[in-house]
Image 1 (tube, one colour):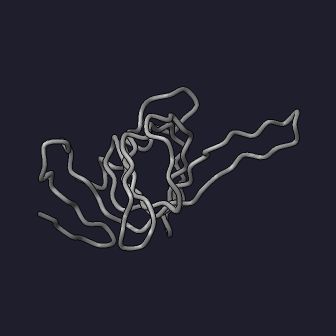
Image 2 (tube, one colour):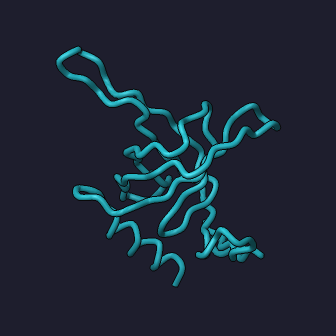
Length: 130
């Protein structure tokens, strides 16, 4: 069941795996899939993903290539028209092929990590849900 207001909509959990309300919004998630190695002169490899929905503890995205399940990766959440960007750490919980457009869909679990904006992220999502 979904409820909509302004630029966001809320999806209430419908299956056993979701324990939180999820918001849908236009946004991007940038995933660093390969770290930079400065002594070798290499740069980080980052892919842009389309944000499908999110909660305080997770995000679901559409991405152009498969990434390894179980990987723990730095991510950046960006919303058009929202001045704040959120640098977070996330674990790839699942990945599946989206046959309709030859892309992949993945679920990430966000978690607390030093130097990230996880507290700000959770407070922002809580305000959006209130």
